[in-house]
Image (tube, rainbow, N blue to C red; front, top):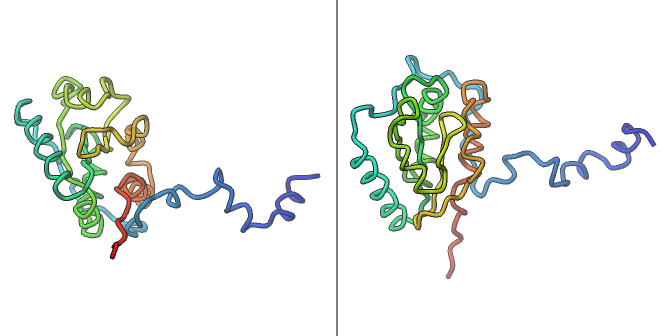
Length: 183
């Protein structure tokens, strides 16, 4: 039996129902905002505060965890540097009104400058990520400090070559599950 015969026999609907062939966005727990092919505002933002000291960064992370607990959200920790093009593209996407609104609804976000992997590296180590494969590294953390996205924290290190919608779908994939009203 040939591949063409097999595909015809299964039908497209049956193929889409297979877990391995389902689109990534289908695994999202909440609907991602639609951004399509957007033009990001130029120049791209410089999202990382290079002057902040380590104690202040750790205080920001602690405050974000407390706020996430109170608001039933997750914490999105964005580690990178202003020298990084991929980090700046991610920041440009975050500034889009529909993405910013989505993130604000689902996450408490903290950007952390890591210099050239020489600053604030104790922060990701707090969540079990002692070393980076690149930046931006994005950790999604529960309010209790549990890392949610593990090895997937490095998925956006090539953000400038990714479709903008794919980046937004990735962010939606790790958002907390929507709550259904119980009465």
